Image (cartoon, rainbow, N blue to C red):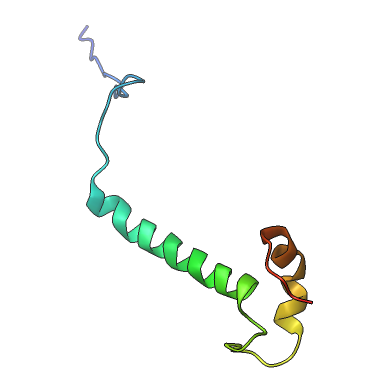
Length: 74
């Protein structure tokens, strides 16, 4: 009777240093950076001289965030 052996895939050991290629990380870093800049704009500058949206809607949504980050709004 013939026996067949099937080997399971071996995962790399913990602690091995496999470098992450910059080309894999760079698009995500740019995307997250742009999201952070947009969020900072809405929390810090919207409803001022550079307002994109009219009214108080954006101000009310980010009001507590403004105070938490130290932006004046009153």
